[in-house]
Length: 544
Ligand code: ISL
Ligand code: CA
Image (cartoon, rainbow, N blue to C red; front, side, top):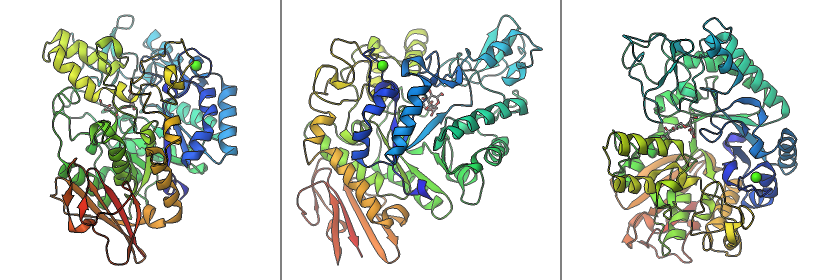
């Protein structure tokens, strides 16, 4: 299938390119950068939400699915972007946020207007229990997942902010409205959907039963119905964002022999450096053996039965070079390339998040709460530092530096001019720049043959040339090794072997030497030192 052979590039439109000098990225800005994206050699652009939204959660709170957010432009701008992208052979995948809407969506305004409004049942309303909350569910953005509506004297459910009420998927009329909306977009010619927290859409009937949080079986009925009524009529790609999903769960959502989605995003590897209770807000040390074990398990569990989506980064995660690599000036480029190769040479469809191809880093220059914009971060600060005093301000700032979602949301760094070419000089961007932009930017990368950009470009080129990169079976070697990740891929008598040093020391490994008849396909050093793997060195050998 084409989506198995594609490389996807995620754009966070707010932070990609401002075209009209208001400090906010927009659709025309994306159009201006299509050359750059084509040069990188990606196939699909996934746009984080561009629909009308009051921006409580940067567009993940949609108030009208069939309008474009004024900050981003107009529907005519969108149509122009789609046409231009298609003319260049680039596909466009839209974010589909249907677990919830904005509380400013017309449906919710109707729903909350009275208990017998026809839209009441589009959302999830419950009576108070013992004069209080219906149950103990917590919102991902702190506090209870229930908010009380004075007007109608019931609580509504919101797994995210109180401005993101959850839709009631038990309601067939609501589902039909969603399918109609999806059809409307697909008829415009878009090439697929990335479905936000799609495994959260089904909720228990009875909220008093403990432990019912998360995936429910009905989600599969809904997705089968969606597939049958909408998705199956188009040649598109779908990827479901499914926090907490296991490989077994992924086989149900996206097995080759099931009829729901094409791929899912799993999160297990994004949890290895987080605290079981406090999550991002109490970072913990991570171990390469855990990272290898998790990702290798996904490689083998899905092989031949479903298709992996491969990612290190997205708009909710810190920058990978700062997280699993080394973002010091000495090792940033080397480790960014190493991480890119470790990911892209696995089986699956790789996703590049904007700036990853430049080795963009976390926003270490954000020094106070006032620098942050993300609702998750701000709410967590309020709850854990101010209200409950469970984390000190200093520790929280350390955690934010490591893990806030804003690390990936600073403006794209295009050049070394004021505002990094993201917006006009003199304009204040909606979120501060990463202060390393004079060194780390697209113009500098394009002028340097050894840049991370060209390494990614080369990976994309090699993927087209060698099907083993896409389709080969994966086997992990030396699982206990805490310094080096070695794996092999096999396909039609070919063998590809990757070794990667995750440390800043030179280490010696027999597997790092050229195998018999093997030739070096790609590496991040100019020469081959045999069994010696230099700091953050990665080598990919091919035996044909
Ligand atoms: O980032 C997370 C934890 O801190 C994730 O659990 C994240 O909240 C989860 O993956 C859901 O994310 C998606 O839905 C959210 C939105 O804020 C995120 O940006 C989006 O990717 C609500 O729509
Ligand atoms: Ca703008």
